[in-house]
Length: 240
Image (spheres, rainbow, N blue to C red):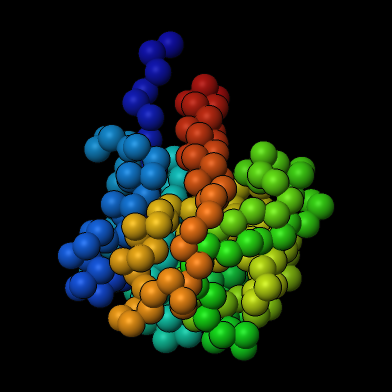
């Protein structure tokens, strides 16, 4: 049997960064493309905030929902439409990875609560502590029990969906990683970030005194593992 070309990974861009951030480092999909070394035929960028239709599940291998400068609690039309798509994608067993805003959007879409973090901003390269269940999780098993991640968020998941499993916490956030199903996971942190991206995303006037920017980032491994899993699932679907 001749194998069909692999389906692309959908990069769901949730709104656009401020102009000064775009001028330095581009928009969110570029950060994931660079992090994964994707070629043009390996990904599909979708921009719901511009009115673009979210992709049919049969046309993609999986999806990453990006971070955003928007707030889930604003309930923008494009965000609510994306939340409905997430619910359908969960039912369709599409591999999903939510990042920051994407994490909050997935939790909200599935019945969780999102609001301003009562503990304040998390910003910089900060440690997470994983639960014992992470050692059995397909995306997290290779990670240490405590590892550093890039964080930049004001809102957070204050109550996870009833069916979600909390897999990691930080000092200021009790829902850093949520597992919803064997195919769907979300993270409050940014596995696509580098120090350069973090610096560009800091608000004006924030410097090293406001955010820890030195150390080893482990989260990129999670991103690579998720992408490899979408490709394996795609291969299995084609062989069915």
